Image (cartoon, rainbow, N blue to C red):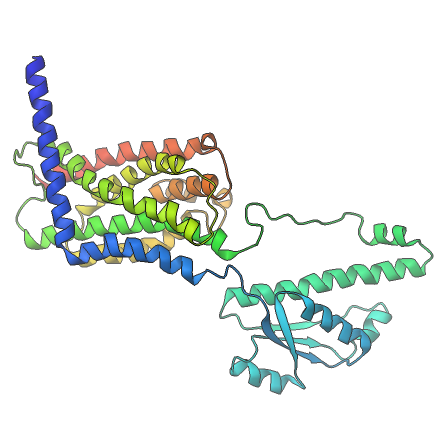
Length: 395
């Protein structure tokens, strides 16, 4: 009995190795799949990291129309100009400012009203108008921040002057104007850079989506070339052996993407100065269940892909959805219950969350145990669903 079991095990391993080798040859003989899995795997992370290399946009040219023309309004404008976010240039009127906006000489307009100084001196509310080109979020954010910072600081100074005029000491006036001092500490992203916030999560999504697309293209090609034949490469058509095909095919992608993923998640953050607190060992510990879950997830869905183009459509459709569900764009804690449950279907959700915690926030591996366990559960569940889906297609 023992000899028989060892013989069966040896046969299974040999068969899985043969399937793995055949899948690797298929990948490297198909230029389209090679482009997606290897070339895009190398190029996409470099592209995204290069686009956001500057982290933030400073000294944005903004036009200012000072209709008041007083020393106080000029002082207010100079304080805005002193911020790192914007660089002011004077405009005579709105027509000139709009003309400069159209030629992209400036990206925003600040209008100080005629009664600006008078309203403040007479304790009336005044309005500083801001017009911004919304084509780029960076531009809107920086101009709005610069104006808000200066206006908040100016409001505090006005309050201090009024309280001092009522006979309060400087310290009492300061306490009255600012009873609760506001001090902002940006956690895990001290430079407030967009790349440090956005790119690490996108790197994990790149792995997820390229694997999904690559496996889908291979499956679609087989369906096109062998329309009336089964997808399985197993010599023994018995349904009991379908797991060998799933594991053999999955091993090919695991071998290739263990190297590609190490390049994406370990090397790229260091090349571009992105947060990289986690050790290579911790990243690999997270990568193993993540890659297995993505591979089995992709194999499950690949049986429904009838041609090469279908995978590309699904890739484009799911990319934006996964970006939102990952918690990068909107905090995962603020999701409704339904969307939290729906997000747990995709390995990218746990992968992004776990990677950001250990590599960007410096968390210990024990902190990401929920994500780590979730990925292993997904790997097991999707392995079972992949076996069932291949059984269905090989009936």
